Image (cartoon, rainbow, N blue to C red; front, side, top):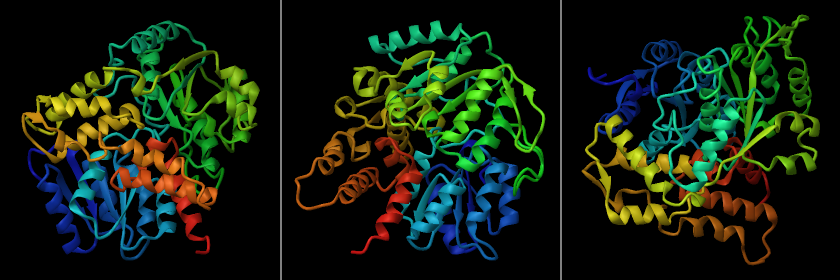
Length: 461
């Protein structure tokens, strides 16, 4: 590892084949990353704990055991790292297992240089896919360039900031709605930061990223031996947030059975860890968010009406980026300055054509997509002006048509699942093969795409 590298730029390569590891290392070090190598499970866990890497490239074909078995221990050793698994064949089953185990993305070898660098650039913002460990509550202000303020001078954002200021002073539950990538967690952090609870824990859980059979334990905790794999007592998110704010992202993904337990918790203010006969009183404020229409979820019976009315006290709607006018330029400038500094690049501004493309793009992935686009362009290029040809190909050149055209097809005999397949595959292709980014743009989880692809393979040709 180079002596001046910071931990935010370290990539841990877990690969037992020296020649393959060397190829990855050469690509990454030539683009500013520092690399560390591990060839087996034991070395990988130890190295991850020591270096706190930005990302982990994990081979699924390690000797002695499946590489997927290492995802859990690596996540525990380096909670902030994006784990990217690499397999020697396009096994959808392996992808599904890896995602369920906590992997952020999945690549099939041989991996091209551009695909590898693009994936690592995309890994810079993955908050909608990540699970915040309940034992490690985050403060309200993070290292993100957006932290501490909602960027944008549009009238829409002015009204949002006014709402946040009014809501922050209350202790009542807040309910944030908005498309994927609009900044729902940032909004929750701003509510917490402006509240009397600032300085107390802010704990975030993504209800769509945690397996349903583990969600109760994640929220309420468990005792040793409460279920298979419970090797020690664990404090849940509600206990960790005592005195502060518990943020439940993608609340509409929560199982109905657990919704009942959450309702009881909200009514009583007490938690009962899994396997315990005792309850504990906690003092927390609940803020939740969803990218769905909660009223429709209630109408369809997927979300309890009594829980909805308990949570939907102070609603906030975050507008999509396409409704925010020139905020896109303010955001792009902010991201450019931040990432140019972070990546040690010379960029200071955009050329006029690049600005025109940014303003014309519809941004289906909203602020998160814009952030990823700017970071990718900066990582892969250098110069004082960020030129139009440095932006990803899908920006400003018919990306929306690529996504929308399969969604309104001619009735040419295709079945509904075939139309759905075409929409999803077009989205994946438009994001250079990145399933997490395609999922964000379509408003679904990456695991949904993996499952659908698996089901399509099982359909006879």
